[in-house]
Amino acid sequence: MAANRRPIISGNWKMNLNHFEALKLVQELSYEVTRDDVDAVDISVHPPFTDLRTVQTTLDSDKIPFFLGAQHCHSEASGAFTGEVAPSMLAKLGVRFVIAGHSERREIFGESDELVNAKVRAILANDMTPILCVGETLEERQAGDAETKVEAQLKAGLARVKAEQVADMVIAYEPIWAIGTGQTASADDAQAMCAYVRSVVADKSGTDAADMVRVQYGGSVKPINAAELMSQPDIDGALVGGASLEAASFARIIQFRLHDL
Image (cartoon, rainbow, N blue to C red; front, side):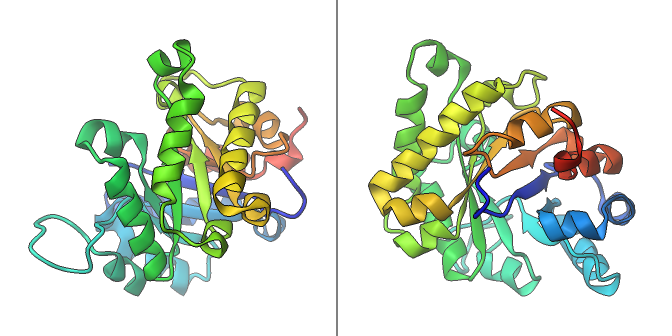
C-alpha cells in the first residue's frame, strides 16, 4: 500500500440483512471503529437496495463517518426497466460508491463488459465513484489466462473514461475462485495481479492515473489475512463479503494496521 493512496475497506453485504438488521449492524460497527480508524481508512458499506434509506438516515443522524455504497445500478437514467434502480436515485440518497461488474453480476446475471462500462460511465456522470470489479475463474488461472481475462475486463470497463476519472476510481481484483469459498489468493499472488492491474491502467490512462487509482483485493478477506494483504505495495484496500456481515470481524479488517503480520 503506497503512502500516497488512502486505503479503502468496503463491505459488500450482498443479498443479506433486512433494514432492521442493517440498522443494527451499522450501529454496532460504529461502536467497534475508532476515530483513529476513520482518520486512517475510508470505510464504505454496501447494503441491499431496501436498506439504503435506513442506513443513510442512520449514518446522517448519528454522524457515523462511513461512506454509503450500493451494490449495483442500471446504466440508464430512467425508463421501462422493471426492478432496476437508476444511478441518479442512488446519488439522491447520498450514495458515494457503487460496485460495477462484480463477478456475481457477470457470471449469474450475464452482464457483459460493455454493460459494465456503461454502468461505470453512468456512475461517474452522477458524481459517484465506481468500484470496478475484475477477476478470473479457477479454470482461466490454471490455463494461464488470468492476466488476459483481467486485462480485457479492465480495458473494456474503462473505455471512454477520462484519465482523471480513472485516477479517482476504485478497482477491485476479485479472483472468482476465492469468492465465498474460503480460499484466498496468497498475498504474493494478490500483489502480483494488483500490480498487473495498475500496469494495465498505466498503459490505458497514463502513469498518473495508475499511481492514484486505488486497487482493492477481494475474495475471502478475513481478519486473519487482512494485514498481510494490505501490506502489499499495490493493494490499497479490500472488498469484503461475508466477514463484513459481523461488526467485530469487519472492524478487525478495518483495523488491519494494528495487527502484526
